[in-house]
Image (cartoon, rainbow, N blue to C red; front, side):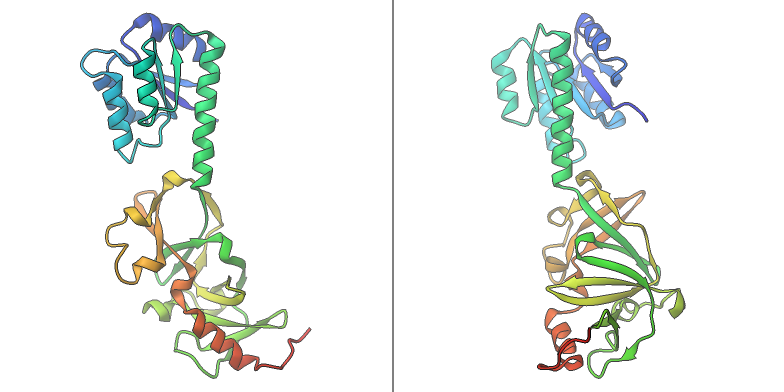
Length: 288
């Protein structure tokens, strides 16, 4: 398991040597002696945290911090200000610095500051994390939040549904409860790549109503960190038309982006309730 990487930024060789001596063995270390070099190395190394001096040649730490926080690709990297200038350092805390450690510092203080900064960053990442199930149908890939998924099963035998659109034309019973099957290939106007017997049904619960999405393939569920997800608010055009209520964001998956959809996007709640009512009229009890 690789060590978390840190970028140590200071124009003093003595301070850099001290920081390396204290932190080596605990972290993978990179150094920079001025602000411009620091920005170049941050974009290349993507460190877990930056230890930043304030007064440096070419570009001060204050400006480095502002640029890091203004860039979405580096805004989440925690920055620890290490300086003897308390008033400047405290001003940096108001614009996004994680912690301030005054010079001179002790070894235990430096180790504690880095540990706390990384723990805070992990906590924030968990808050923005999302557990997702990635699905494929007809060559299209998308993801849905795992919280709506109850189980995944192989395509069972189904019966025709006496109403509804072409993409919701079948149902089956799961533990005595009727479940409508939504054929996503028909819904998205693509062709399935798997024969019926090889398809998967993803059972969703939407406002206490079960719905089965018929798809070609399902990947194992996984929790993705906030840094892997571009939220809807940052996706161009997402506040217009149908995307306003259906697109939750985009998952960065290697060299491509996978849309994350709200499951309600595939069928309206009114349609599902009407279908269930046809299958189980009022007054008829569920089977055991």
